[in-house]
Image (tube, rainbow, N blue to C red):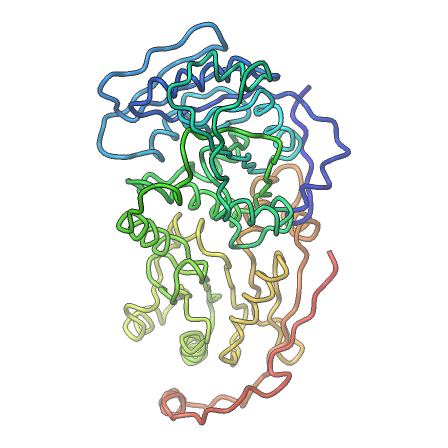
Length: 464
């Protein structure tokens, strides 16, 4: 049966239940480094799957002794990269490039899947092209066990090895989010690459793992963040169980240096506020702002000044081209420019704001739009002032999902059905001064600290 393509609203993977489950070609990508005994156990478990994969690709991260292609199971091949440090992201990408299946399943060589793992982890992926699924990783001490002993245990014909504690942070995250049904912009933290699966087309759309992640950790959270930001549907497949040989990171010897390096990389590339800590509107901002061309120099300057004074500071402004480009570039050198957005910026910024006409934006206008989009998982929000639409903020989630459905459904249809839209009413504020010198002087005047007047920014939601 061919793959089914069902468009669901938001993250509602529960709506996929009525649809029959196809059986796509599945490629298993196993990341390996100097783990021959563990790889042998994982291979034996892959040979015992209730839904055998079409192929297994063992991708070796530069072991001194390359692994051999095992026999007696599904088609298998070994691909290798040079040993230049811990490069799990690059190794998984290498395996994915050699895959031919419609669905990619990522495993680590020290993670042994139960017999129903493949069948369970692909069931919603086969129905919805937007699904990124993570299985349930449990822990046991498998040291010294033969592949036959492990297979007997997993199939119910042998004794179980000593079980180790399951990571509490993962267990609690899945429980409180109802297996990620209630996922939000922070739920990427509950996606781990040791038991990960998606369609090959979604993996390509995301650009795969970011190979700038060298050293332990972070590449899976980064991929999951970009997936969520591109409109993916996150699913925890609790019945897709695989056993990790040894404890979770929390049960190993602490290495604060590694975790600090991981946190630094993530903060640089993920503009989600709790990951970043403070606004860093540099190479990878949270909000991309475009101004339409054709405005006068004073109108453009007033608008850019208003944007630079926003309470939501993690934004970057692209200036319009035109006869005033030189003057604007001189004025805003280092804080705004005319260069096209980079692929990194487009993949990682959560919101793209386009201002259609000059407006006196109140300081919390962008914050209000961000809050509406992020908290309500909206596709777009109109900014209105005095009855006129002055700008439109579009979520990266809506843009990403619409991109993958292009050719089948119009982008507006995808946005409306999958996310819905909303409106933020802005207080028009005082009329601007005629000349820029007066405007700049007024902008520099200290303002008394006082609570924001009630109703200065109001929002309402449109139905999906």
